[in-house]
Image (cartoon, rainbow, N blue to C red; front, side):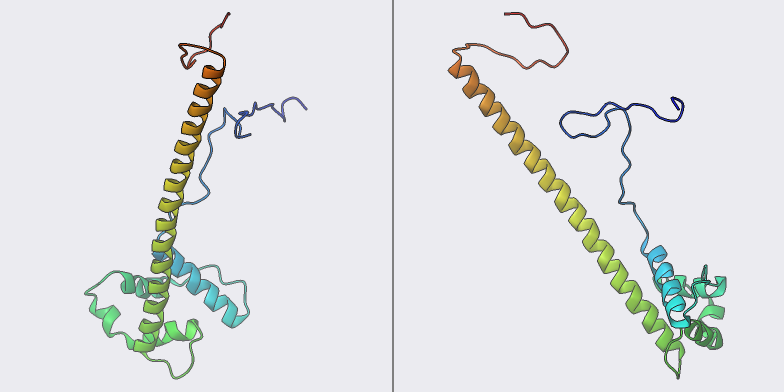
Length: 167
């Protein structure tokens, strides 16, 4: 039983383990990965089939061509594959190459916009947290000064290292 469990001391201020590194939940996910996941989810929903694990490679390359400009003539001129991709996505008939491209572009724009907003919100939140921490530290400093003045203390200093303090 002792081998399975270990005691981890918690920091008094935040109740977070002090000797364990924290891992950020928010990870950078590329818009392309989001687009592929979204397309797979669309295909699953339209077919009522949860067994679709991934997008076929040829369709992946078509989706990738939306985000990156390519001069691949085979990809640009292959209307039948674009139509098959639209059928895989279960788009409404009649399906044309431009319909599939337009669908992919709209999805990509929506996801990239959401990613931009998310990144800007993360920056705003981190700035707000820093401002709050700064305000807290100035308030604590003012409280210490007032407390020292009330106790008629002339000089005081911050204790940064553990040491014995004797009156």
